[in-house]
Length: 143
Image 1: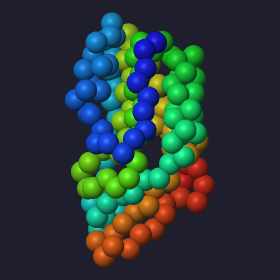
Image 2 (image 1 turned 45 degrees about the horizontal axis):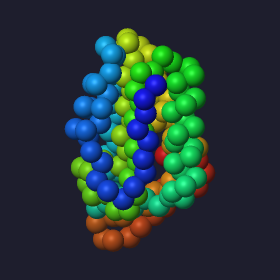
Image 3 (image 1 turned 90 degrees about the vertical axis):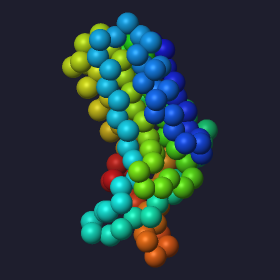
Image 4 (image 1 turned 180 degrees about the vertical axis):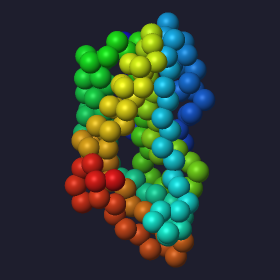
């Protein structure tokens, strides 16, 4: 399995992710892109601000890709997360999987995003239109 795992403050390269996954022998490619939404529970969001323990987060993300590869026949996998301020419409996270068939691709992609939210040391602060911020989730997997 070939993988691409990263966490950084740079804008996430959505088109490059698809090219990376398509360069496999796979017939099933699944990509999930999580973006900042404008409206959450009736409140307008200006941006999300992410903080992370970079070393620990990268180590855990790499582990998740390895564990997914043990459960599904993954040819290529991508797990990218952004830190810093992410404006409305911009990508915060990209998860992608290429497998020979679609079912495994869907399942592995879902596993990766769900486990990332539960276990990786990344924290999210939601900033509203008035500049007020609220940390989201007080434990892993609550968002």
